[in-house]
Image (cartoon, rainbow, N blue to C red; front, side, top):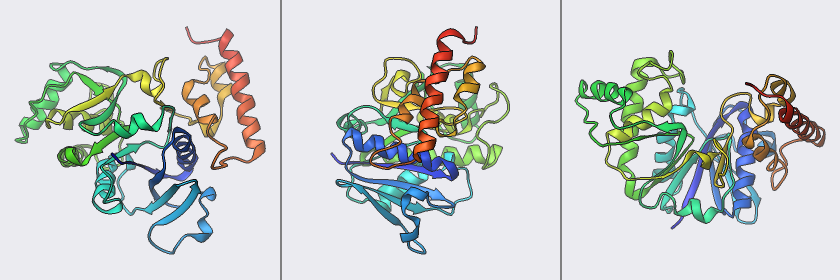
Length: 308
């Protein structure tokens, strides 16, 4: 089985893409990382050699490369994931058996052979931070009523809520991408194309991108190959992925300031810092020293001071 990886980024998130690429290489992944982007290419991506239009391929090391794919969509990238997965499978890599989308604030911790097989016979997903969402949870009932009013069946029982940061699809499960796109378009028609969070937690589409993913799972009978939330370092004991959710992102620093507010550096920040240097050198030496030193100090503060 041959599985490829893709991601989406713009602006300063290129630091996350570089760390993701480094972690993939260390995990044993060889092949192409398909990176859809808007705006400028990252400084470490050899932008001077980029063609005036089209895909820019950058060789990284030992059979591993990044293909920067310019995108013109105006929607927030968090809604573009099913479309980009389709583009990878339909256009960019016709010989792959599966594609995994990974957010650019995630690094890979586990061996590639585990991820490579993960989406073979089911959609590869990871439980979100608060993952238990029973089949007849009141929000699911509201989602089902919403879809029924639009003549869309949502009869497939699901009892977990999944993160949208990691989604793997094999060619045998391609039908799910069509359902996911349909739900994304419905959600966008309700709240617009730029909103990620909408209203408070009781809104029908509060975490709009992830809600669309989870609603689509209710409307499709695709099997799910799921890992629990510690697999993204949302809890201790994980060894597959590490997801730096929230803000600021690890490359933005501010660790000491946050530690003094009772929030010391988490596992994902430390995982990011392990992947800033090789094979892609993302940071100048002074910035790297500063970030590492601030992580050390902030971690020490966290041993004695934290939120009640």
